[in-house]
Image (cartoon, rainbow, N blue to C red; front, side, top):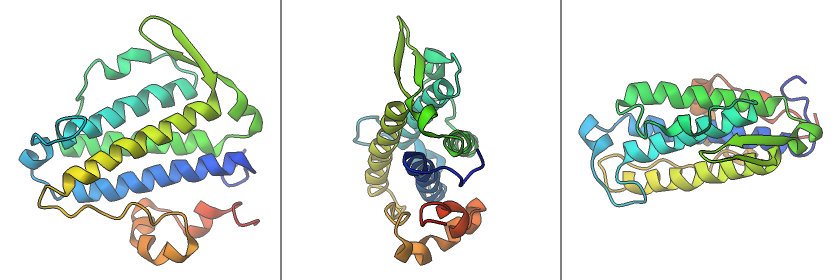
Length: 195
């Protein structure tokens, strides 16, 4: 199925995958303004630093995206809790898995959303529907990005707006991001507005 050709629920998941990549883009652009010391500095949150929190998002993305692609990576995804302590290397890795998630969601249909996904855990294989796994993954990303956003408030870098993606009236606020990501409004929202 071509990207943008999905209907119904599949369009929702594709929009969420794009939103995820866009929100990461905005947050990564902000984090780029941190020094290495500020990126790794101990802070108050669920994980003790921005680098630890963002690497947690990444390794969990690897786990779930691999499972959704039919892989068996399992717990190997988080053998190293901070695989990328350097911001530049981390940035490239996160953007890479974001692209994988968009590609996966661009091929969804109702049958694929209902498909059983095998997630290889340390002691067993967990089974769940693809749509539920995706919903969990998006919630996980939003949850931890919010923590990074809050930690940025205690740094010299202003936290970016992360809620200007979906509404047509907010297009002017995301125009530069769309250019940086190589997207157009028409490409991203094709199918959602009935075209």
